[in-house]
Figure (cartoon, rainbow, N blue to C red):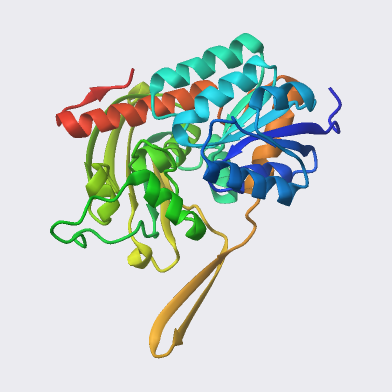
Length: 367
């Protein structure tokens, strides 16, 4: 296949943030031709889809199957409610389209299995959206491959988002109804705080766990076999009301005797001056690597109205471009993508085992 061929793209729902389809469209080899969704979706879903279609200058079709068959699309981008991710991906793969899917892969591992089967049966490429294209993470992988620090044996990831999720824990007064998960996500869309869009409540492990687990998978090159986890709703009332965590710790036992751990949380806007605390530690037989994911950055500290303030501006963020460059290469060469369906399924299974461990208080096997 020509390395300059352009791929026609169908965007299948954009209920979540539009950063995934926009990131795809920013690459010169991917041209959006249609936005589509199922006709039975609620009006607010159609409204969001219609907005993106207008921004991209393409039609919005309220019929996924018709869009897949009539617009000559070769790639589908899925960014729907989380519980619909896999169904839309399966339908796209069955129609012969390569698939780029937003996270999480699914709220159920059984749905991930459907995607793996459909992708492999139809011989199409699949990539979970991820952050492994960050320059600092790629450099860490290159260093490990060159033997810097010796043979790695342990990894730890701090993955904290300094972002609010509605009223703080403890703010609900006696007699107030619990916060409805879907309604909160809809209202939070304008501010970009609706990471867990869908009917089913999701904690941070399901919403963001793919990112640190994908780092670990990339850097250590090993599957997770057993996990032990602790979770809590520490910061946000919406998490308390819906019984899902906003803070978690997970210990990982991996192949070849490797060990790992991660701490993850949505820690409130005041939780980190730079907006996020994302750091990776890799211990090796002869040294260690410490990776600040967002670097390089430009940090600015100043005082406004007598209050200290800090702003960090990320530079050289070519993650989106590199993800799509990798996806195009996989199609061109019939190679593997950066995070394929089986890898996405393995991460979802690890998250599920961690949530089971948090309830059982015991070590759980990743199935």
